[in-house]
Amino acid sequence: MCGAPDQAVALPPGTDLTKETVLAGRVVADGLPVPGAFVRLLDGTGEFTAEVVASAVGDFRFFAAPGTWTLRALSRAGNGETVLSADGPGLHQAEVAVAS
Image (cartoon, rainbow, N blue to C red; front, side, top):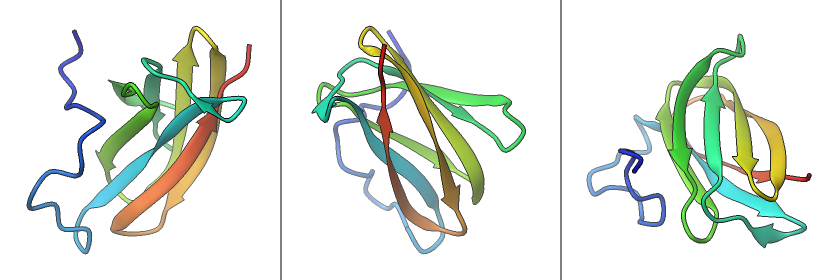
């Protein structure tokens, strides 16, 4: 079992989006959510930083520093990735489409 927080719940109480950078989104295949996908966070140099398991509706979330990040999803439905630039604190959202 993954030790990451439940990805389906709202942001934790006390999260201050004026000070914290949150990367969030959904993994999809043909527009439909992909539950249980492994979502990896890679830094600007491509180095692995963190991994979570997407929720039952494909949602994921990372707390990170501002910067350019690659979100890579690995699932039975296929793999995919997208780049997300977070220029500062706040909620930054992306969709990661996977294909076989």
